[in-house]
Image (cartoon, rainbow, N blue to C red):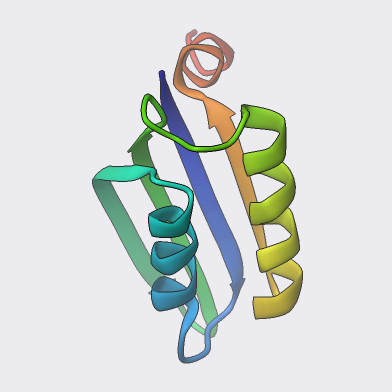
Length: 89
């Protein structure tokens, strides 16, 4: 299964490192990433492979949400199929 991870918040040092480290701990591979800074705000979208993750999807969502609180950003993860279906016209 693939997932879409989004990160949004005020820019500061360590956001990419923190998210990447957490994904490594969860054994989630980053397949593609796009990130930008708009004025003072950091935005990042990652396509990930959850196939070898060592936690259930709900636990992954919870851990990323907690990490977001620690980093001062909002982190969301969605199943890619659901994400794609939500964004079709």
